[in-house]
Image: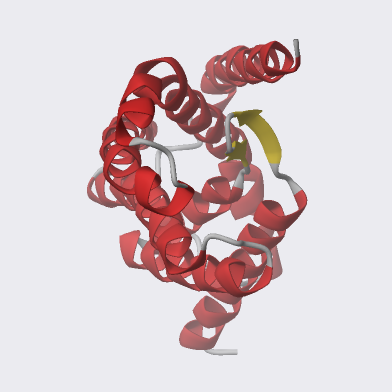
Length: 216
């Protein structure tokens, strides 16, 4: 199997896994917002193959989601693709330029900020159109609902990405699908795993609190 074929097979596998993560893990958090971890897989693919890989997988998964499990049509697909690209492609662009642990952290933080800002703007402009909510009601929910949801979602995805990246890449290299590449990301993985684990626990706790508060 040549390098091009290996890349196509690996990208197809990432796309399938991202779709499965979206379809099987959908946790209602607040209002109509649900947490699903597909961006973790899309980001790992972007770290491996660059931002274009994240863009392609985001488009494929967004389209398949639209025709299978989503009821929001093209607007929902565009929203999902924009959200994923803002987070995953931003992280991948920065990591491509600086393939170190610090570069990965910078990319994930930048992706978190950009995704949060973009989705606040997108929800303010588009949610009233396809959800039928008054714009004033959506504006009133931006800070208490949309802002914490997107921050927690991105933080959770960042932590899971850092925890899974090295094991996933190691498995792919052992299978021969991914070639070894010079990267310092794994050199301080143990110490950063503690930080990523703490972020994961905190973000998970916030999600649980939001879910429980919605039911009370």
